[in-house]
Length: 408
Image (cartoon, helix red, strand yellow):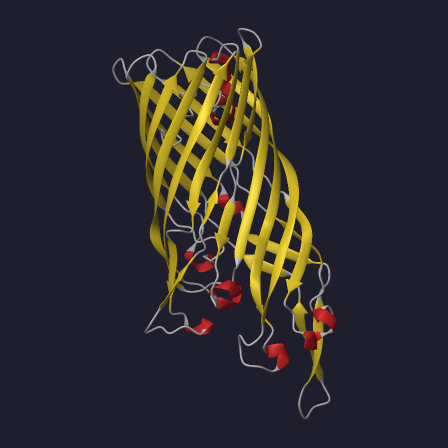
């Protein structure tokens, strides 16, 4: 409800994730559970006339993504140990992805990309004095790549016109990694201050590559040139930092401003390693020489993402002891440069406003929010050999969610 501007205020169990150092200000034990609903694809389209992919520059084609709904959850737990110490646990889904395209030639670059991740983050916090506290924790991430698929044009191997025979390849698998985080919090008479830092994570995805609808002429069930087998990839997820200030504005209002940073420049490439590589031998006409042409080989996708900043402004109006209204706005930079902007992650800078409501029932709280998220139109301008279709993406997403917090 405050557009995520919560690093400094952090006055409930959500502190276990937003700023663990603030847990020392929470009495007893708190448990919080929430779920979010994100509309994906219903308001996303791509307009392209890229001639390399067989499209007409004079009459660009509009492609729409398949619609779906993502439901990331969060679970927070905090407990006071004594006057100076507290500990907590956060289970979150900070990294996720779902995109799905249905039409050629976009599906030759990406048909479906689906990533789910969970981060389990235990923390312990210590109060240095009445104002300052700090925290340290561990981050354990488990990532599940449900789909990383694209269409596969076999026509050239069969001596046919392009897109005559099209199959599909998909990589799925899972992996994990460990990281760490630290936090600081200042609880002062005139303002609150918070700082957090999380180290980068690099789960190695171990899985399997499968091929579908391979033409029988390419071997028994296509297994000669397109064999299923093990595949691996490493996801380089960024280090993150955030800083926030919260100040009271009268007796009933609180305002917070946060700036967060993500070190996406560590994501330089995505390397897909296939254990079963294949090739064909082609005789050069009128010559004795032969050449070997790869069919299934390792893929290295250049990414060259950029570090990003996100600016968040949130405010809360405490109407009375039971009811609170919240408002917020954010501007979030996208890390993907236009020359590696692919259909799998059609990202761009985004702007949002938020509306939230909180109800306090004594030992429990209920909170809800709604966030419309506008993505800037962005035009991809890269190389077809790197899977980029040149054209313009536009998108809009609805987010809403609810959370229950119980104090013991």
